[in-house]
Each structure stands twice: as structure tokens, then as C-alpha cells.
Amino acid sequence: MQSISDALSCLHDDAAWFTRARELRLLVVRTSGDLRGAVLDLLPGFEFHADNRSPWIVLDDARVGEDAGWMARSNRLAAAWERRREAYARDGIEVGAVPLPATASLRQSATAGPSPYLSVFELMTGAVLRASREPLRGLVLVVAPTIVDDARALDEEVARLLAARELAACRIVLVLDLDEPPPRRAMAVAGPLAVETRCAVEPRQKQADFTAFLASAPDGARASGGVVGPRGVAPPRRVDAPPELPREQRDALLRGAGINPAFVDESARFRDQILGAALAMQQGRGPDAIAQQRSACDLAASLDLAVVEVICRVTLASYLSALGRPEAAVDELERAVSVARAHRLPQQESQALLALGLVHALGQRFTDAARAYVNAARTAEAAGSPLLAIEGWRLAGQLGLLINAEEQAIDCLKEAVRVAADSEPDVAQLSSGPEAARRLAALCRARGWRVQAASLEEQADRLERGRTTASPTSVGTSGG
Image 1 (cartoon, rainbow, N blue to C red):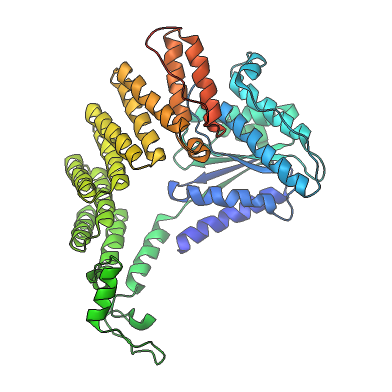
Image 2 (image 1 turned 180 degrees about the vertical axis):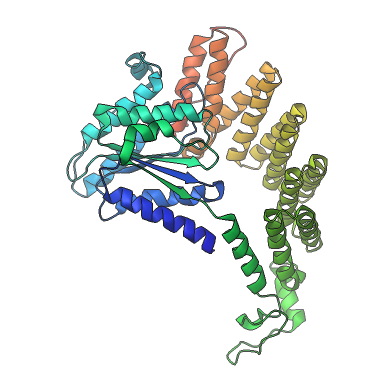
């Protein structure tokens, strides 16, 4: 779509200029949530730009918790440099190694200052810069936190990195959501060597794209034979078109593949309802969006598309919730859960339960939300979906703390850590398991259990590095 390509083209031009103008210290990228993934796919590619001489390392860890994510970034930086060191060696470029940021030893060297964990990250960044060799020059850090709990503090932290003399060869790309305040302090430190760019879809262009797509998309008659013509007009049959199967034979083949033959005839209408509902929501036509999305749900049910029906009902619930109808949203989500359960679709069931927990939480029905998150976690774990299970347990624990049910919260957070520790390394790194471990560590510290707190913090570090062979640390009910 033109709206997406325009936004990404603008980012590409600004990032290319940042790559070539090596005197620039800071590139601030303000992006919308729908383009964030594309932005983080695009930016690392500039490491291979013809004019680039610096490694580009993406650090998308959330800015949350006691350490504000800086220990996770330190671990990620060390691991990324080690991978590059091996790759450079294959190309005949020898660079130095850097130590892993072992939590205990680095904390001892970073006890002073307002942010000891940021000091650890400064040490790691300095070590990478010192380990670099020609033809490499400097380092580009793409700081793109998925969650920012304190935008002003993040601004101060980035400003501190830019002001550090020993990090003068380090340049920063800071990726922020549009609704977050601009990093005025960091931009002031960088001064004229700072550039800001906006990568977001323009609402009017997006609506124009959707409208044009709906107006030009072929329906069932127009798509026959792969020919597109005016809406409502059947195109002539292609000269080289293969012979058509008799309808009975076609339907038998479709049923044999597990497809309801009616879907072939109804797919165009189904597509138009889905896209039409999304466009109506964007244009502020809530009742029209609800009507079209509900029709899509009913059509999916009539076509025996259980997975699609669950997805459609979750989407319908999101529309209802956004329009201030939480009770109707809960009804749709409970129906989605029932459909998934009846068709033995545990992954879709857990996704619907997570959405149900969110709607309950938004309505401040925290007990119901926690129950939905626990059910989502158990269902996901039984389905072999550890990412969903970890998130469900973590959210349940977080809500437990919110309603002062600390013992239940501890149990849920322990489950999140356990599932993360038993998962594949890449799953553990992507999950919120490390966050759950750090939340548990904070609870232990508040109770005076220093040994357990230190052990959990070390486990969080291991999970962030993808080390999942160690058994999960247990949290007892008495001090230690």
C-alpha cells in the first residue's frame, strides 16, 4: 500500500543519510505501532550499506524494572559482538573478545552513580569499541525498547551515553512510539549532530488505500480464470484456460482436502466483510464495523472455519471494547473460547483467554482477569505454546500483585520462570520470563531474602542469554 511504502521510504532515506554522515551521533525514529516491526527489520540492514563501517546492534529490551533493562542490553550486546567476531574471523578480520557481563563482578565495579546498571552497559560498550579493529569504525546501537515505563528516565540515560567521552565513537538510533515524548535531553546533548525522522502511516492515505483496494478487489465472478474486470461483470474465458472440473468433482476434491466447498464461492464476500469492518473502524463508523465483523463471524461459522471464526470473534471483541461495550466484548470472547474448546484448538483457546483477561483488566475486574490469564497459561502449556504460557503466567502474577494477593502472584511468577527455563533458548529470550524472574527477585528483596533475590537475578540474566539448561530457582516461604 502507498501509505506504508511512503513511510518506509522516508525512513530509508534518513537512515541512509545517517549511515553516510558518520559525524551524526543520534537518529531518533518516531514510529507507529503498526510499522514498528518493519522499522526493526529495515534498520539492521544498514550494517551492509556500501558506506557503512560500523556494526549495527539492535537492543529491543523493555525499559522496565529495577535495572531499566540495561543488564539485558549488556548481555545482548556481548552476545551480538561474539557472533560478529566469529563472522569477521571468517572474512579475515581479527577483532578482540569482550567479557560477558557477569552480574556479580560487574555490579561490584558499578556501585557508584545514579544508575549502576547503566554503568555496566557503558563498560560493555567501551569494551566493544576497544575490541574493534580496522576496517571497522565505531558502533551503532539501535535502542528500541518494546516497553518504556519512564520516558524521561530513558531520555536521561541515552543522553548520558552520548555524553560519555569514552563512547565518542558510539552512535545511537533511538526508536520510540509516536505517543512517547521526544527525547529533548538526548537531542540537546547531541546538538546539531542529532536527526529526527517520523515513520508512520498517514491516516488519510491509509483510508484511501483501503477504499481503493475494496473498490478494485476482484469478486468470485471477476476472478474466474485469473482475469480481473469491472465489478459485477464476468470476464471472458481465457483461450489457454484448463478445462473446468464438474462442480461435483471439484467439491469432492475440496472435501478431501478438508475444505468446505462453499468457501470457494463465499471467499470474496468474506474478505470484503473483514476489510470493510476494519475500514469502518478507521473511519469512525462503529455500528457499521460491528455489523460487518459480526457477519464475518457468522459466515466463518457456517463454513466450518473454526480457527477463522475464533480469530474473527476476538477481532469483534476488540472493536466492541474500543467502542465502550466491554460486556458485549466479554460475551464474544467467551463464545470464541467455547468454539475453540469444542473444536479442540488449544492454541486459539489460549489466545482468546488472553484477550478475555485484557478486557476484564481494562474494566478493573482484576480477579476475573487473573483467572482468565491462568486458564490461558494452562491451556497454552498443554498445547505446547510456551510463549503464550509464559505471558499468561506473568500477567496473572502481575495482577495478583495489583490486588494484594502476593502469595498467588509469587506462584504464578514462579510458573512463568519455570516454563521459560524449560523452553528452547530462542523462546526464553523472546519471552517475558526474564521480567518475571526480576519481579520475583524484587519481591524476595522486599522480604529480606537476599540469596533468593540474587539467584533469581542471575537466572534472569541466563534466560536473556538463552541459557535454559539450569533448573528454575525456587522461591520459598521463609527468609534466607
